[in-house]
Amino acid sequence: MSGKQILVLGSGMVARPCVEYLIRDTENNVTVACRTLSAAQALVSGLARTRAISLDVSSFADLDRQVAAHDLVISLVPYIYHAAVIKSAIKGKTNVVTTSYVSPAMRELDGAVKEAGIVVLNEVGLDPGIDHLYAIKTIDEIHAKCGMVKQFYSYCGGLPAPECANNPLGFKFSWSPRGALLAQRNSASYLSEGKQVDISAQDLMSASKPYFVNDRYSFVAYPNRNSVPFREFYNIPEAETVIRGSLRYEGNPEFIQALVDLGWLDAEEKHWLNAELTWAQIQQKAIGAEDSTTGTLISRIKEICKFSSEAECDRIVSGLEWMGLLSSERATVRGGNLLDTLCGQLENLLNYQPGERDLVMLQHKFVVEWRDGKTDTLTSTLELLGDPKGYSAMAFSVGITCGIASQLLLDGCSALSTPGVLAPYTKEMCDPIREIVEREGIKLVENVL
Image (tube, rainbow, N blue to C red; front, side):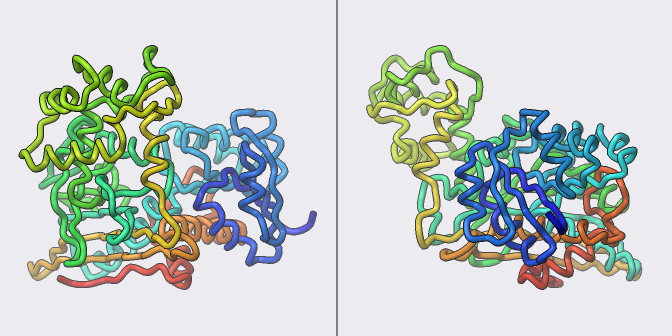
């Protein structure tokens, strides 16, 4: 087959806009691979120069063969599989693109990647991705004017639009429920006034605080993962505060913390968990209640959870009842653990309905000190709503950005052609991607407060 051969691993929501972008170039031929063939077939339905195959990325021989047969592999499978994909790419001398953070396992392969002469380009989605493109742009502009970035804040949220946030979590799933919930269970580190602050996974939700973006939204924010290296990654050694984090609607972190306290985010297998139990019986066992009656469960919940007020208690207990977690209905057990069982329930309750739309909100805030001693606060904000008749804002922003970066790599863009495990942390890498992202209608609005 003539032209460029591209392998897309995974058939999730971000894959279709990525593939649609790539087939704009008539030289590109795209193979979508998924463990479930029907899912891959559904994704490529109606798209020119595409085909679907069944592939299990944990089958290394099959992965090696398919990767070697392509010019580029785009890995949209869970990040735990990226290292295996890169190892196959090293053997096949095939370039790789992912939207994920560079993990330690991926970083360890940098030497072998360079020896193979291939590029492994990462962090080209929304967050990480678009956030880098605009952080680097503004920081470079500030430095060019002899300014110093003394404080840097970056918060991003993938949320339901306000009119669709009609559930106790104020949240709906535009990607894996398991991944979304576990993302709120990470430990976090950041810099504040020159000192490193470390927050345990257990304390993360209690670290959330109200965060103002504009008058139309009531957000809370909490730090995400490890922000400390970004002082170096973004070349802002002068920064005393560096925080990257996540946005949620008010009330969400407290509800997540309650689910943690009540055992629902526990991924360990439970020998007692079986399909004969009701939801109330599962909750009884998880918290050690005397019986599974609603009154007994609520009394025990009040003992375990540290509610800030009676009203907060009523709100969260009502939410648990809305989710069916205190009901006498037979539970659908998944994965032999409480987390996957909860995810199965939430997939039914917290999915987007026809006509509903999501919201991507991303804001950078820079506190800048100029040479004359004057201080300004600059913001760079993306407010992107999904199309109820088309793509969600999350799928569009991640998929299009990934497609653009992939096409630039295929076209031999010099800024993206240095072999190694890369992420877009320089002006030279970011500018070509950002300029095309803007042409697709994704552009941050910049203001001086």
